[in-house]
Image 1: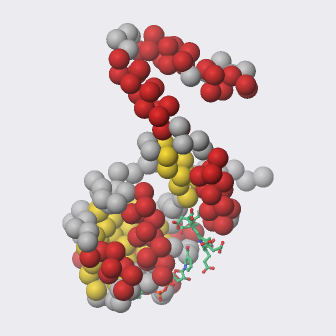
Image 2: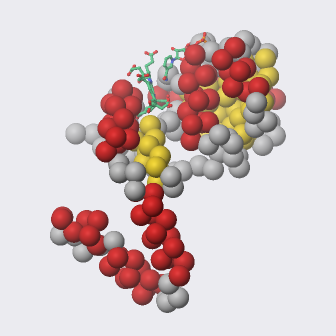
Length: 198
Ligand SMILES: C[C@@]1(CC(=O)O)C2=NC(=C\c3[nH]c(c(CCC(=O)O)c3CC(=O)O)Cc3[nH]c(c(CC(=O)O)c3CCC(=O)O)/C=C3\N/C(=C\2)[C@@H](CCC(=O)O)[C@]3(C)CC(=O)O)/[C@H]1CCC(=O)O
Ligand SMILES: NC(=O)c1ccc[n+]([C@@H]2O[C@H](COP(=O)([O-])OP(=O)(O)OC[C@H]3O[C@@H](n4cnc5c(N)ncnc54)[C@H](O)[C@@H]3O)[C@@H](O)[C@H]2O)c1
């Protein structure tokens, strides 16, 4: 059995600049994935042709910059830190990937796992809780279906539980070790059926 070795991080995509190259069906899918997680995500989208759907989304959003022309190497300059490539030309994606590599920009090439520094994952969000799902690139369809299952089974009160614990955490005027002990005690019943100590 292979083991997923991807390291998950949760990026503040309203604080960093993402460049998305390609404005067709896949470009739209990736733009929607970014905006679903954070409507304030900063995205510069460059594409020879940009679909009407993307233009409609960008119309009301200051954080989305559309540039309708072919990609230029200068597009990687400035403050771009994350790159998603979704052009329909494999060679173009590869060339841009190599340029980005030289600049240390983390890159995802939509249909080419070999050229990805990171994969997009499925995400389930309930208020402040976010669960990320990855199948190590093996089955995006499983990731999507599993997201749907989690969306259905995670109780609505999950977020109020987190808010309550946040309140308790802020009010505890004790040392770090004592705080950890109290918070673990208060949340024991969440895992008690499994007999866990933590
Ligand atoms: C999770 C999600 C996030 C997102 O993109 O937002 C995502 N793909 C989603 C859906 C989806 N993508 C595809 C289908 C059609 C069924 C199929 O082909 O399997 C469906 C299902 C559908 O749409 O129903 C096509 C596809 N995808 C990849 C390849 C190439 C290959 O595998 O070689 C091909 C074939 C292209 C072709 O044949 O031309 C590759 C990748 N897709 C990933 C992410 C990364 C691995 C994630 C993981 O580890 O699970 C990875 C490796 C790289 C990346 O793109 O980041 C999103 C679900 C969001 C949600 O709904 O929750
Ligand atoms: N990973 C995935 O989830 C997934 C799923 C399906 C397809 N794909 C792949 O993604 C690619 C894109 O598919 P699509 O359906 O969006 O294609 P599309 O034809 O709808 O869009 C391609 C986009 O790339 C732009 N483009 C082409 N050359 C460019 C250049 N030099 N500079 C800037 N923009 C350029 C076009 O103007 C257009 O906006 C395909 O290769 C497809 O196989 C990936």
